Length: 205
Picture (cartoon, rainbow, N blue to C red):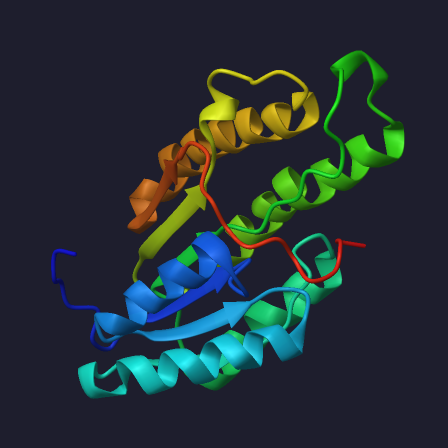
């Protein structure tokens, strides 16, 4: 990986207990950042943070674990309040957490599955982006990175709600980018294709 310095930067990564989020958190810490990893389960986060601290300490990076369900507005509010209180600033935030509880014909999508996907994959991104942008603007700017999907551009078969949410993430990113640029907050979206990751130990609730 190309080396770049994040020394002195504070970064938050949600959905960081495994997969893409964990890899991003490790990369940031490897470049010297203080990284706060979040997801629903504190135990899983503690494991990741401890591992990152061991791997990245020589390069100046470190990691901390704060549980936060990205589908819960009250938990998001508490999370960013704690980040500000304990670390004093926020320079980078990555929205990565996502679920897809229903694979099947979009016409048969259960309402409960639609609502749950929307809660985490779009509403959660929106609320976290709001909170992160406000905190960054107070401290002179920062960078928000939304992990979207190629499904948000070209939907796959049997993943209708997931694709709808990822398309929403792309539009949301553009909206925040246009409005927050004046406050030196960059907002970008990455749209990866399929990525092989380990399955969760327990299904999302």
